[in-house]
Length: 155
Length: 83
Image (cartoon, rainbow over all chains, first blue to last red; front, side):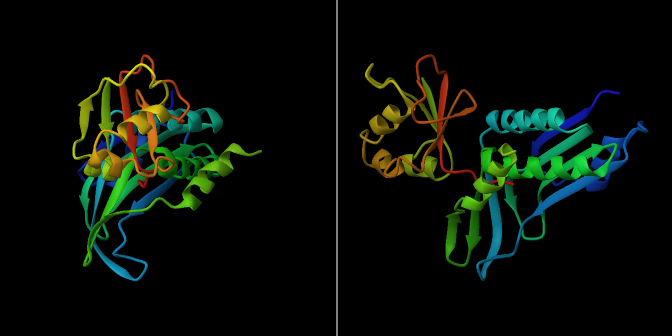
């Protein structure tokens, strides 16, 4: 069976159970599904965050995620993967991003999910703006996100 | 060529996109950042730390030494913070 790939950028929330069903529906070659969801935190460095606003670069964001999805598909024996990234205003406790990876065995699914998230954080053109009591401010990039992405290019 | 700006680069420039016509001696992405920084106060503010600015040509990440010849769309933005 051909691998199943879904990439979406949307304002609406996603239903994790429904997305997992879509990934495994009608096939019996899946032995493992790994799910990662990124969730909006209500505080950052002891400061309360009332909301995040996600901006993206339409066209490039999809292309960049697709490029990394293709890399994951070629690097691990996946039966499918799903990446959904939300944009717009997101409140604490709400979902931001979903990565699902499916494979015959768990190791490929775990590794591919981690690879996709590391690359997404460092390379997909999305930017977070935080709302706090002090006002709104763009979130600074973290150097450990670049380091996390870089470790997949070693060995 | 069309230029797009995102996040705080967009806010500082004061617009999300525009069409520009830089002189012929502006050959690379780095040249273009330096040229844009001279196009007024808002641009000077947006591009005051050129090493922080990331760039993409036609939806692909590029380094400052990338040639801009033939580019349809060049985008400038801060380091990414999605996920």
